[in-house]
Length: 562
Image (tube, rainbow, N blue to C red; front, side):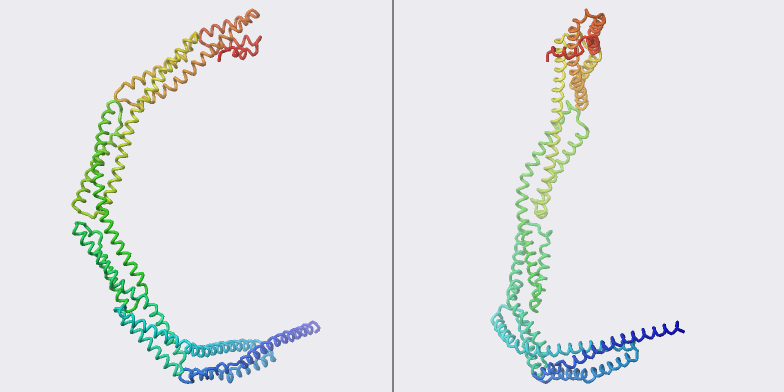
């Protein structure tokens, strides 16, 4: 039993504690809601509503006053007492441990009080709006009436400059007057909010007219006088140019002017109704379009002068190009007698002739267009500039071909100079050989010299052929140049080596009597020397002498001339 009693007691204790905590929380919420309710009751709402009594108690004001007073009476006499009853119910439920139900009523009551707050807030705003409207109406009406009178005076003075828009100005002034009358009537009826709307509408319209009365005459002047005059001047200018033979149909100026006139008429209709928003931008756009058309005609006149001045120059230029092409052909024929000219180069010159003829025909066509005024000079000017670019390109191609022909002859000159230089080098090598007094050259050196002479002869023969194949000649000369340079280097090495061998043998003669091996070695070295094997002779001599003079080569080289 003990095991059942203690847990039961513990549960009861826990239940009592939790109930006490929940009850305390709910009572705290009830106190908060009660305080909130009393706070609403103690507000000076009746005093705020009572401010309306100072106004004209009739019409809209009287209706709103009764509505607000009844609304407050309902809150105080019905809604708040009902909330008080609900608070008692919450406490009763909490005492009976019906916490969930009590919490639901707390939440509902809280929402009702929030709703009452919103209702009171709106009520006070409406009261304030009505009172403020009456005050604003009273302070602003005199300013509006004064502004109306001043504007009326201005319109009277400017009636002559308002043109077809005068009726709309008068209509709007009448409308402002009607709004002010409606304002007075609504104020007398106690409808201050309605009167406020009339006053604001009148004020807005008045400001619009004040701003418009300054702009309108200028806009009307542009629509009725300035732009139509510019259109007329442009049309007269077109007629004069057409009578002078200018072809202007391609510019579609007349159709563009008709569009401007239509837009101008529509703008004028808007001005009559005082619809002026965006009119400045439209008029600016029309003015810009007219200026562009003027520029088009001016450029056409300028282009005529440009074209005729340019055509005289181009005629002389094309004649000069013909001379250049003929000279190029003659030069090519002359060059082909001595040189090989590729089919590609001949094809390029054929295309140059065709291009020159095409440009000549095009120039005749341009002259015909200009003389007979078959197109606009603006378009002819574009074609003239394009023709000029093609002629410049043609001149560049002619110069390139001339440079190519010159390069052929220049290559021949350089080839001959190089060949003469190689021949002189060969002669100089023979002179050096004779002067050196060496016994002779090895077979490989003789073969290289013979090969070089054959290539030089072959290149010389090629230079005598007609037409010249400079490509083949240049290859032979490059090959000959390489071999001659190698031969020159080889001969100088052989001469130097032969002189060194001779000196070494002479130096070694002082050791002949010391050893038979030295005697035999030097005899073998002399034999190799006479057989032109200078490298082997040097090695043989140095080998037998080193036994007595280890540094024999350096010793002998000191006696050699630089």
